[in-house]
Image 1: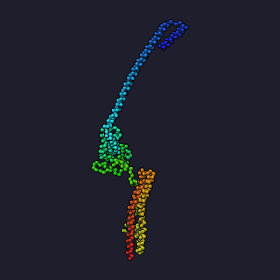
Image 2 (image 1 turned 180 degrees about the vertical axis):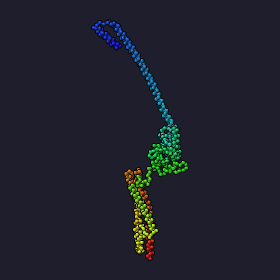
Image 3 (image 1 turned 45 degrees about the vertical axis):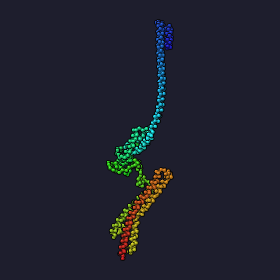
Image 4 (image 1 turned 135 degrees about the vertical axis):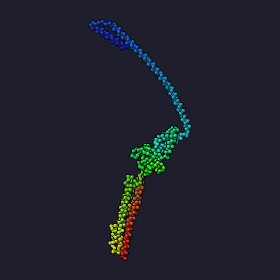
Length: 461
């Protein structure tokens, strides 16, 4: 309405201005002012009527919206009342259910009675069986059994009949398979990490045998792995795998592979004794004992070869005594032939002197072998004392709680003792052989010398 009034005022002012301008301007055609005013009034009335209608529509719409909002509010309040009533009903039902559950739990506990202890035993049996299955070689053929057993060992509720039957079946399977010898195909991991499909023979729950030797089941990785070092009876196990029927010998591991695995880390006695071995445990004394044994053995070999050569020459000389050669008996005969004119006593002395000159050549080096046989055990005793001193030092520093800390000293003590005996025993035997051969040659010289003296005595009667 205000816009219409403003428009009307502006029109009147424009008409007045136009009248003034017309009075001043030159004469123009006459205009019907009344018609113009009537037209303006009609426009104002139409605008007022339109605005009134528009305002009435807005007021009607506002009243309709207010009524709708009131209806919605009433409906929301009604819904809230209904939900509060439903909440009270649910709360009452929840409290009643809680009370009923408590009563039912008491009834269940009363009726269950001793079954609670039975279920505890079931969990214990499942846990013990899981520990056994984890380390059983049977799991190499039937993997994945530990999953169910772990669930049974940690279950907090009452196990179902199906679960109890499954546990019973797992027990029977382990018992049955522990007495069977079965072959099956499986992936075997070699010590270098390579994998291959091989025939695996399971001997109960004790051993796994492959065409390459013994294997074991690695529970954490669930893989069949070959031993890094096969025991000495591995060939027997491989032959056992190829036996179709009948009876065949095989070595079993009652610890289900643990002892076999430990044997791969064991070092043989010979390896510990050899000075050039990387696992040598004799120390410096062991090197000395080894050097003494090698030197004496070479000396014995040289003396035996020399004595056999000299013995052959002496044997040839006995067959031809008239021509003395370059050998011990030949030199003794030469002394005899050079002194045929002397008396018997002088001849005897000269022949004894000739034999005494030959003795150092025949017996040279033999005394050193005897010394080596006597020194070997003494050096072994020295190594024993050294090892025990090392052991006592470890006990002083770290105590006697861990035997592994004392193992090196004790091993040195025992290994050097064995090395000393190993050095002495063969050297005593070799010394006896060389000494006997030398005495045999000396006996031949003395025998021939006695014969020459007797012959000389007959010629000078």
